[in-house]
Length: 241
Image: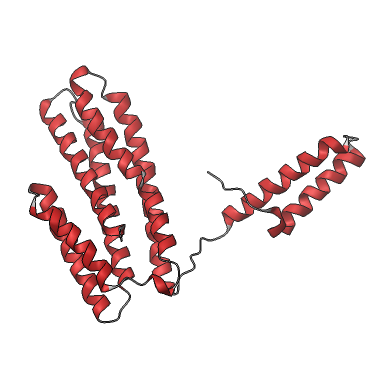
């Protein structure tokens, strides 16, 4: 969705609106009361288009971190778009009464994946400025929360949480060495997001090429939905402070 922009920051948009106003009033003989709001709309739309064409920027003290975070934001948007497409496809294909549980699991996982861009945007806001550097204490709190979940987990959940524990331990070591642990945090997020893309693709392949009435296919779809949800839970743990 295109965000509205202030035309005063985009002189070319104001110029086009001004020309449209003069042409409408003097040449087309349109009443000024009609043309004024039209010109204002033209200026706003023009400014918004110009704004959308500008490269994304982040006000971070670490240029490399800013670049990596922008990449993760783009990845998150891709996941959200793919998840929405998968949700619609699953709703169209899983229509039997015996498939409702599987459909609900797929929809829930896709909804969670669709929240990714907002989570990354929130993290971006928290990372603004040098005072946002992750402290050892912040990271240890994150690690303690993950380890608590790890003690009561099993199977795939335990496997993914173990990877997250290892990632947080590396981040803590970086922070202790005085390095910017935010880059390691963003790299871990990128890995989770790319894993989510892989699972979404596998789910889509199952929907399109498998016998959806088959019980084994239903189990596999449910398992993949659970895996996708686990990735989103780990994202929550990673972006929390």
